[in-house]
Image 1 (cartoon, one colour):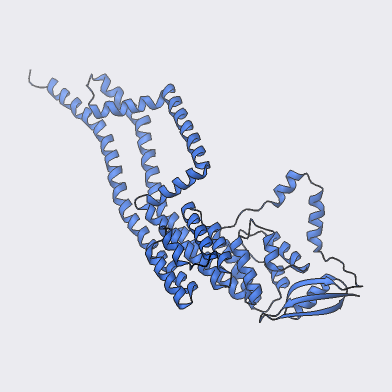
Image 2 (cartoon, helix red, strand yellow):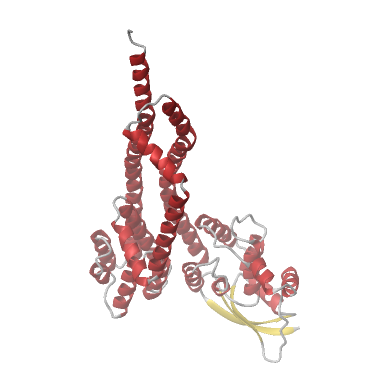
Length: 432
């Protein structure tokens, strides 16, 4: 038997310490789990010996992978970043198990056997192994940055420190679900126009390359002078099959893409592109509403769970993809460090709308900034839904008009020479 000293936390948040006489570290962690505690640290007491616990299947896999070449090992252990809804499902499952009274290691063991689409079973297995070795759940998750973001890790750490891990996990699941719904709405709004444009372009190409040549032969055989729309369509078709024209177009496109990529790789280029996106008609408004909602909801979720405001702003800054928003958050964080309120730098940035600034200011005055930010997020998510509906309402008639003009041009290109041909035939067959 060996002695292990431990520090753990009760579900109420109270920290406790003690010494256990057990065979090894794994047995010590099992005993701590049975007591209903969350382990913080487990170390061999002076004069005791510790045998590192290892999950036998995991150890066998590590031994096998160590025999493989480095490239094959990297391929075996490569993980993809899960989707938001997949993270929401995984988080909800873990919260349900912990709320049912399962110790953390037992819950992670069960997670290996539950259906968690997008999250490999190895993730739960590795987390369980790390926790059994005495590390906290947040520290264990920090070793898997592809799966768990800084936002997720800091939320879990706040939950561990406050003793409200289950509640924090449920809030995180709700956060991911709401954000996934926003992304789904944006993607759904683009599916219809993309499909209509693709079908329209495919039909026009089919007509130009397969139908038009037959009509041209027929008109040429009857010596009919082709009208201007038909000549334009024929010229476009011939140019698109000309080798030099194709090479010239491809070269121009390649050069343009190279210059664009080079411009996009610079910090100045990224800033200008992000600023340009926000100024786009219709789409710019939708993007801004999405950014504002994401900023408010992320910061609200972090602050609500006890993450310090400076850390919360830093994490929110990393979550945002638009550099204009990120710079504004960075400046706000510096201002808050100097002792200013959050509303002041947000207003000074001229990036965030006045409504957000006013609501944050009210939240600071009432002492409930998370609730104010949540209200902001709900407001902009509602406005985003309305803006998406308006965009779809506008896109539909515009697409119909554009497609009608394209089809009309094709019909004119064919019908005008046919009318001329019929007129010539009727003139030739008139009274002798």
